[in-house]
Image: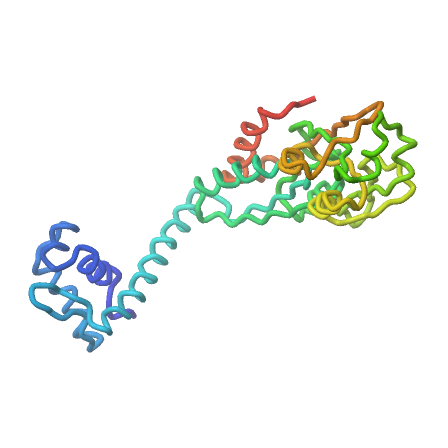
Length: 297
């Protein structure tokens, strides 16, 4: 059994926070005697001196400074424990696992996660970044609770979420920009294309509008963007992912004669809506709201 109560530690901390015994009594609405008794109980129980008087000031001793650090940790953890209990009592899940295709705009994703985290501060979020059919595979294997995927779910819930626009781009110094004319698909085939590998382990699919005979395959969208910025090829990239590179002139759209812009539909998918907890439903609601600004086909 603990010999010092949480309330006594709270009183001790309040003496430090308010700058003295009298001030603490007023600050936490207790009598001065109860404040002195609580601190005195700690000192006598633990055989330690917490405060010293210097002139008219009450200051921490060296031992008191150390004890305050430990008391702060203890009281903060106790407060967190209460929040956890309240969350569990409300039926709120403690973990939320989400798979998101890398083409989904990060700015919107971060806004959604921040909003949900503010509503459920004790929620642990596991974010898995995937490519093409990787997210739907994670849902099928029950490795995540919710997914944003270009592949719709047949045996579960699928909802059209947003449309992602792509453009073919290359570094301004790339040979494709030296033609000084509109480009055909045949022109592209003679130059290296960088594509992103499907992250699924089984049933991989091809996308990225493969057409070049020379091809480099990478695992992440960010790697593809870096390679194209460094002049190592061309690629079809999500417009939202390369806004800064386009604005700075690191990348230029290729002047294609036909189909200069293409798009891909993203779906919101999950297995069973009834099994989703309050935090998951809050994520879904916030995600739908934020995606209203994106075009839905």
